[in-house]
Image (tube, rainbow, N blue to C red; front, side):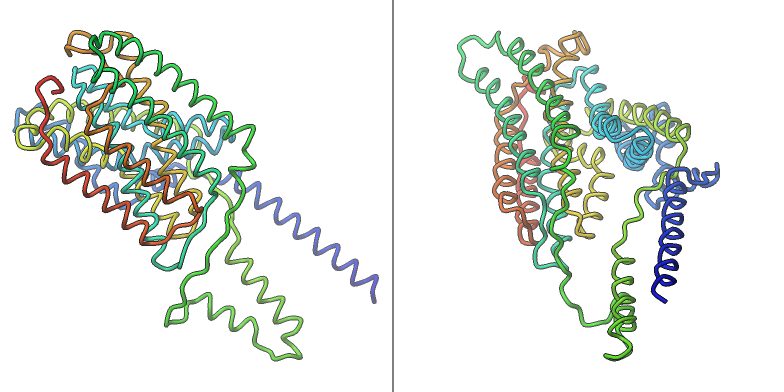
Length: 444
C-alpha cells in the first residue's frame, strides 16, 4: 500500500541518517590507543631511515670524517621531515580550519626554517640563501613536474582551479620581484649601504602580504579555494579492473529486471567508489603534540650537525649545488611524496597547493623571517654582511625563469604529462649549471 511504502521509506531514511551521524561521531572521536598511535607514526616504510638519526648524532661526537657526518645526518632528516608534516596534519584536524591552516603554514616548511636559522647562526649566509631559493625551485619545477607527469600518464589531461593557481603564481612573481630589486640595487648603485635597510623594509611588507594571503585563502575567499575542479577519466586499459567487474555485475538482469534494480545497484556502486569518508585522526591531541615536539628537536640536532659539516663537503662539491639542490631534497622529501600521490589520484588542486603553496611560504614567510632574525642579531659577528634580500645574479635568474615557466603552464587550468617533462628538464638544466657554478669569495 502507498502509505506503508512511505512509512517504510521514512524509517529507512531515519536509520540511514542515524548511521551517518554515528559514522561522523566515530570519525570525530575514533578509538585511538597507544599502540595504534605508534603504528601510525612509525608505520611508513620510509621510517626505516630513522636508524640514521642516532647514528648521525653519535658520529658527530665521534670525530670521524665530516663528510660522513654530513651524509648520515642528511639521510636522517628525510624521515623526520615526514613525521613532522604528519604530526602537523594530525594536530590540524583538532583545532579547526583557520587555526589548522595557520599551523600548516607555520610548520609546512619547518625543516627549511630550522636549517636556515642554524646556518644563519653559524654565519653561513650563502647556505641560507641558496637553500631557500633551492626549496622554491624544487617545489615549482621538480615536484610540480612530477605531479603533472605521473598524474598525466593515465589521463589525457588533468584539470585544476585556474584562479587559485594563478593567484599563487602572481604572488610568486611579486616575491621574485622583491628579490630582484635589492639585487639590482647592490649591482648598480654606487653606494650599496642602503641594501640592508631596504631589504628589512621589504621583508616587513612581504610578511604583511603573506598575512593578507592567509586571510584571503581562509576567510574571505575560502569558497573559491574549496570549489571542486573537473575530473578527467582514466585512459582505457586492456585489462578489466575490479571496479569494472562490479559495474558489469550491477547492470546484469536485462531490461526487465535491470531497469530498476540493476540501475539502482549500479549507481550505488559508483557512489560507493567515489565516496570520501573524510579525514580520520590517527593520533590524539597529546600524541600529535609529543610527536611534533620530539621530531622538531631531532630535526634541529641533525640539521645543526649537517650544516656544521658542510665546509668539509664544499671542498669537493660546489656550495651552490649543496644549497640549491641537495638541501631542498631533504626538506621537501615528504611533500614530494604527498604531492605526487594525490596527483596520481587526480586531486590536482591539492597537489598544486602542496607544491606552489610551499614555495609561497618560503618566499613570503621564511625568507623575510631570515632577514628579520639577522636584523635582530642572529649570527652577528659570524658573517661580514647581514642577511639581505640581495642574491647572487645566477640564483635570481634561475628563480625568475622557473616562475615564468610555471606561469605559462598553469594559465589554461589543465595539465598533461609533457608539461611535467618540461618542468623536470628545466630543473635538471639548473642542477647541471649549479654543479659547475663557481662561488666568489665574498659570497662564501
